[in-house]
Length: 64
Image (cartoon, rainbow, N blue to C red):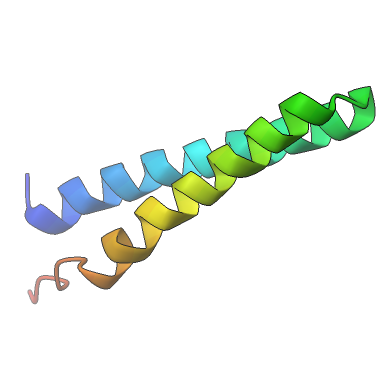
C-alpha cells in the first residue's frame, strides 16, 4: 500500500476513536456520571493530542 493510503486508514481509525469519545461524553452527560464524563473528556483530549502531529506529518499526495 502507498504511504498516503496507510496514513488515511490510520487517520480514519483515530477519527473513529475521537467519535466514540464524543458519543461517550454525550452518554455520560445524560446519565449524570461525573467520573465517566471526566474519563471520556480525557480520552477525547488524548485522541486530539495524537491527531495533531499525525496530521502535521502526513505524507504528500501522489501525483499521477
